[in-house]
Structure formats: C-alpha cells, structure tokens
Amino acid sequence: MDEKTIIAKRVALELHDGELVNLGIGLPTLVARYLPDDVEVFLQSENGLIGVQALPEEGLEDDNLTDAGGGPIGAVPGAAAFDSAMSFGLVRGGHLDVTVLGGLQVDQQGQLANWMVPGKMVPGMGGAMDLVSGAKRVIVAMQHSAKGQSKILKRCTLPVTSVRRVDLIVTDLAVIEPTPDGLLLREVAPGVTVEQVIVATEAELIIPVYVPTMPIDVETGGKVADVAPLSSPLPEQVR
Image 1: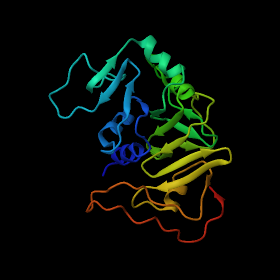
Image 2: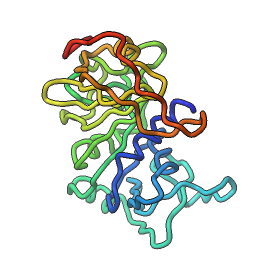
Image 3: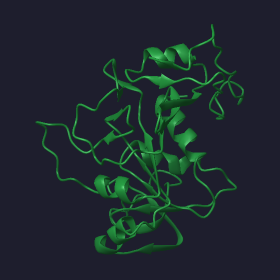
Image 4: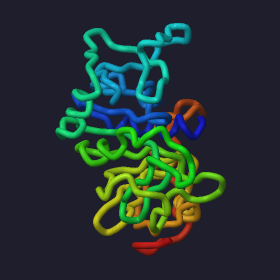
C-alpha cells in the first residue's frame, strides 16, 4: 500500500454520517475513494458543488465537472452546483463540519502552513485560509517528511495559513492530535514503530503508554498490522 493510500484510508475513518465535508486539492481528494460503505457524507468542492464523488472509472471525465484544483470528479444524483459566493458563504459561515487539507508544514502549536512557499509563484491564496478558519474540524492529510526533512516542526518556517490550531494530522507514519499541551501521538501506521515516528518528527511528541496501529486494512491478507511495540518504556514527553 502506498503512502497516499494509507493517509486517505485513515482520514476516511474520521468522517461521520451526514457531515458536510470539504476535500482540499491534491491528496485529500483521494479520501472520497475510501469512505466506509455505511457512511454517507456530503462532499463539497469550494469551486461550487455539494455532492462530489470519485469517478467510478476512467473515460467518464467531463471538462465542466472538476474539483477546485481542476481535477475530474463525479457528482451524485441530486448534487447541487452554485457560484463561488455561495460556496464561500458556506465556508465562512461555519457550515462545514470538516475540511481535509494538504500541508507543507505543521508545527508544535498545531498551526498549519500550506498556502505558499516564499519565492515561488502562486496563482492566489485559494480557500485554505477560509477553510482553516471556518470549518468546525480541520484535518491535515500529508506525508510525514519531504526530501528527508520532517514536515512536523517545532515552529513553521513557511507563512502559516491561520492562527487556529488544527484538529488532527494524518500522515503516512502516524495520527497526531494537536492539543493545548502539545502534539499527542494517537496511532502509528501499519508496520511503523513509535521510535520511527519520533526519529522522523522534529517537533516534540507526547507519547502515551499504549499507541495503537491505524485500524486500516493492508494488502497482506487484508489484516490489520500488529500494534507497533515499544522496545522500552518511554517518558511522557520525548523528542
């Protein structure tokens, strides 16, 4: 199972029946493929659609039906299309239950940087700032490291998207919950140890006595991997 699939499958388990959910550009759009069969959510694209669904197969693309990043999407029966003013009214009005966003960095305070890299041209701010500030729950879906460098830092070095603390970080290695006391390690990915997560994370982590494995199916027989063992008792807070 590749890294993006691990992240998307785990994020999908955070969504609950009846929620209005925004999926950001890139990796977060994969979440639509892995929603549990018994969960029905209303997926919103900030360019003006409620009722997004993943394309069932290639060849059904329609240039008039895309997500906010221009990628092809499907629409469920009864989907509603509207203009950007209405879409951002939903976002800024606090009507979104959850937004799932990609990230460049998240720091020890739970602040997200994901809208620009200094010195690189960007087409605009997009909706990231509105989504982080307006959604009831913010989930960051991103790879744990990039080019050998941790993306979970003591302090963001890129411009932050919002001063708000995000609610959950899901990476290919772990599930981490930002809290008032710091970053709490909730789960590790299948086949990953707590020690590996600590080494791959620049920020300090709060480590519970017991850290379970993500409850997602893996390709080896469809079983869930064993809980990552702690080779030795870890202190309450470690780097």
